[in-house]
Length: 241
Image (cartoon, rainbow, N blue to C red; front, side, top):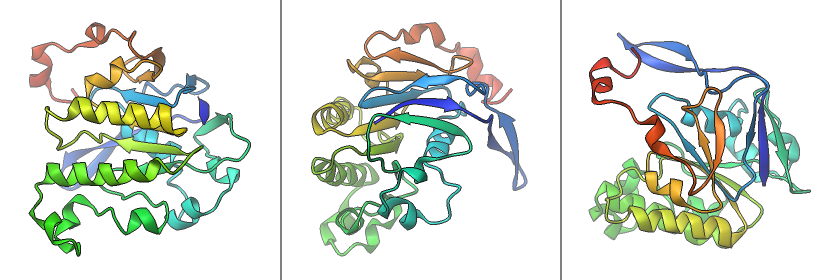
């Protein structure tokens, strides 16, 4: 389990400014020398659009390495080293975090690779019934497959980027419950970058709020999101005024 993350180097995210160009902007939530408390089986990353949630996961995942396969199939604590973070952990034997998002399927052996397909690639699967699924139904299929696989794992860290995307409001509570049960009942650690407020109510979770400058950790069930709500006028100002 990753118990804390110390910021060693400030970093930027990028935004599309038009005409195929992108510009970087500094992420104030990540102050050099600041330590984030991540000592929980479920770590929930929250923040406004563009606050750095995905960037944090990518840096934690150490995507500066060249090979996904080399990074995931070898059991080496050296792979956890990063120029961006000093990572403290509680396990004697450590493996690098495994990334899951709509863009990258989790690379954790043949069992997951053969079952999970990217959302946009469901028409290429050999399972005919999957071709009839909506994007939301396919997301549920992906997550269900992954949760069943995670129940057989332990002492691993998994990174999820907005897993609620495409899933209906009627299934969101079930989704949060599934993450909670998997994290606290399965012996794994899960980082979730999310816009789903139900994650804030999970007791025992650590809430990392990127709206604080620098980011701060809170206990699940005790975080007051109303202090950070944006006014309606903020929608007319754009994401990056």
